[in-house]
Length: 309
Image 1: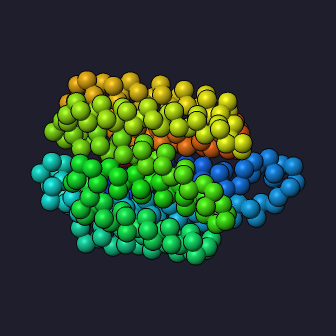
Image 2: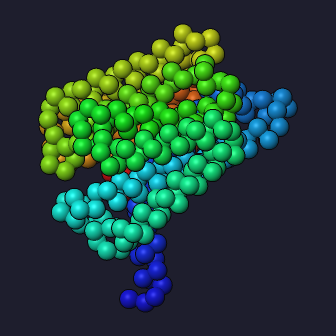
Image 3: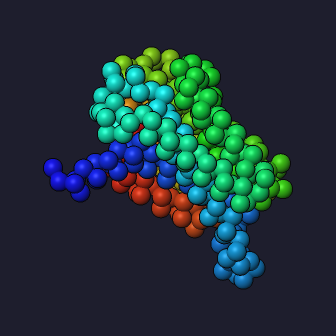
């Protein structure tokens, strides 16, 4: 094996720790939050009602979520190093491709990038970024092993990430805070069912996850009661979300074996982009929703190269 190959294997190990496919789904959270904070953003640009400077906060927030999500997922493997050595020895840390010390350094740098980038938008954005960082560490170190607080904790991380997108216009957060409940419930469903992705799970957990997914699907259309949200624009994306997620979750609930659960979790995580496209289209129109949905094939391609769960 030559030096170039060794270098590639080293870099691949670090990329595996960061779960690139998952980070793309975090970008979608920011895009939907940004849509909720500014309405018809691109329509305003096309009509000359706003300049491209309106997108500068979006760029900083996309960088912020890259650091925050990447740092959180890296520390997940740092804290799970001993367990992975038994259950998933091929992962980057237990396989020896990345040392635990270097992984800790990588995660810390990513968190720092996330907080600093958020600070470029506002103090409020930085505060949300710090909250996400602390929530990620709490989940990675302790909460993930609890059947109730684990899913709730992870849901709060994801809901806060959407709120980070809304913080592009800090004054809007007080009006849009409720949007965080949608990813909280969705991620809680995925996290709950994922607890059985190694040794299998329980049917009751699968049923609970299905119930949460049903509530989410209802909620994204019920937002139509808001004057600034167009449910008809969100409907095609909601249908796509249901088609992608429900069959896999139903199968995992009926037969909660590890393989079915892993498939449900993988599809569920990647379909976060479809969920975000649904809400984004309601606030900013069909074309903006399609823009968010473009992230799905990118994430799916990366999922073929790097692990999602």
